[in-house]
Length: 218
Image (cartoon, rainbow, N blue to C red; front, top):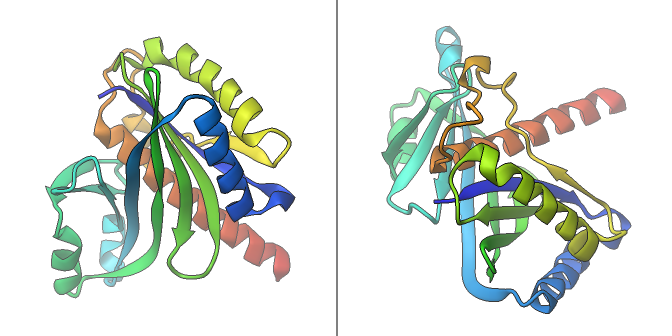
């Protein structure tokens, strides 16, 4: 696979649905070819045992690998491949409970060497949602090679899809929320586990934003 970057998009006053409708039309104007749809499920499981808090985990299920779920230990940063039914198994042990989750879905396009996934992250606990843009640069899998290309593509996205409607923010993996020693070497090859970490980090950032909002309202 190539290198994938994930962005959140604050659509501002335009609103989520109108912004996504306009953005999909803009992708078509860029000669984007529709390649179906995509979904990602992100679930945070919290240990019921206070002695096992270091085992709080985040599960990420991608349509790219429908038979697998990526299990992320939030404290160690370790990413493991697990069976698609691992959530049912973990909840069945009565040791974990769902704490927070999101359903990500949208349209997938091919634009030259790029695969663009445009959609939203909808939180399961309430009715809040945010726009997401997931871009894969297919020709290379090396971080350092793809980085400048994806930065250029980000500028194109900001100018054509976002425009004056809100703000595009790249999801940097929160290594403080996970484990600092798991940060990738710029020379290493990108793999799907890095994509799972980006979606997990997006969920962690939403959680932190909600906490700040509660603190500001208290």
